[in-house]
Image (tube, rainbow, N blue to C red):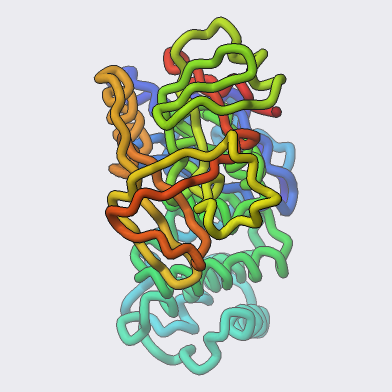
Length: 387
């Protein structure tokens, strides 16, 4: 096992476009690092540069303190698990797992011990003599992971390994991968476009956009303290609500009313003009289900419920609002960047399952403005990060 250091990594293709642009990330020994972002952000390219499948235009890649820029993939001792499994269809599960050991000319005894140990870890014992074509997608992915395990590699690299699986199986495999990584304690770099995978698997998450690192932090920090509009819009499902806002004194004016905000946030936003406010869906609630003694009525507003989605343990209400053309345009651009059609001029409000609000109802909602973020619409910077 080893740490991985990426120092000012740049990847440019023939046309000069930087697919990866000056990225520096240190992955600690034993850490589970996630690279996440929309399609085309450069995350898979960066992973392929770690393993040696892509040349590095500039910068240094170090594995275990050793510079590996000029080493062939086979000389880096890194195990990669691909999206398409990359199994040999004519070989049994046993032989697929054993393949890298046979290439390394290990003894039959060692091969058998390692294959059976990996098989036990991945619950593949009863499938060892089957061919990949007779296995489910989840079983094939476990075989690919078994082939990585037996190599005693310094690190695991995963390139969107669950994207070919159905939703239920993805959830099961996420748990298996998390348990396996924790048990083995091996350094892992995992690429995904699925922010649910990123938030549930990673010790830390690197959010990328157009080849540039936007934020590197723990999942909780990304969710609660996004540094800019892009990260705020990309992380979270449903995504953060964005509203045009102005701040005067300790008051913020939103399309639904004017509310008090903490002094520190107001001071950061002073003199900035038109801003973009960000509020998570769970920071709203139906006043009718809140203890009256805990409701600050100055933070409530009337809203017309357009659509309601009831999911059993929770429900979402949708509240459209009017906004100027420039705000609508910015939300459309942000939706395109984060590869989502969920960002628009509407509130998505998470309600307690006990709320009886219905479609076409006029409801009184509470907004927790202590959790509100304020963004500079020109730069995307979160003016209230850390507060």
